[in-house]
Image (cartoon, rainbow, N blue to C red; front, top):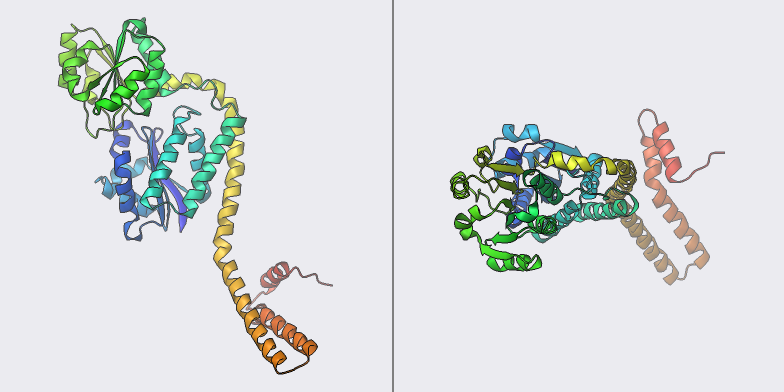
Length: 415
């Protein structure tokens, strides 16, 4: 069984492709169960965020997982394969460590990915698809991420998606303090954005969520109010800034809804940030003259401005990752030899027991103990050395390699 990672991310695939392959938390258990059914893979975990969808697997071949991904998402393989990357063995380990550290993120060093990876591991464990190898891989990933964050400056001066959204809004509006802000959803990303926008003291903050109680919990933190998602149609025109990130499979803000809001606002501009994958806002909304719509991919240009201060830390972080990769591969290699070692010890133990029983019978008959012990030692020596001696005598062709191996195994020293 090979260890590998395959997936797509913000570097290899546009948002239009990523949203077709995204998995929401509520469907991950079902997807993992389907992936593991019929013995396709021995172990599996799925990490799905707004910037990436990745499968971490132990299986005979990555092609099995690629075929499953296309079938599960009902997409022809030819449509997704050009965007996919596959990392086998060492590269898979290195990639996993780099993702956990934020070295592979759109925002270098961002911390959210670590929590998302831990959640993916928890779901895989609950689904019964997280075996010893993947569990060890992820636990090592978390340790590497902690080491990198505590010993390098990779997380300093971080420019998050939320901070980037504020920066973009400031390009449209002179003062955010004069604007009314609507957040759609009540998840982690909306919470982060609300924190950043609330710091600018906007005129009003409203949280719209499908579950009103959860919306109120978040709203109370920022002195905001909560509304039901169903009220969006009649309330949208009231807001200058709209930030949306829900788990909806279909857009919740359509072109017609925004057109009506713009007319009601007498064409005052609306700044919209759609952080959801799949998208919450219909693509055509961005074509309206009075709407400034940004997606997660659009934010990439903003976050790059904060990269320079962290680039020097990347070298140190990559060195830590490289060392930990070697350690993990050593563990993996050791684990692969465990069945052979166990079999070798079982064979030796059977021989020992057999000779002990034979010796005890001789002692019970009254034979001389010294002679019995000498006989026992000879028989054990002959049994232990029979297999390697026979292999050396029957070796075909050049025996030098086998002789060198036996010399190393038994630590022999030629006179």
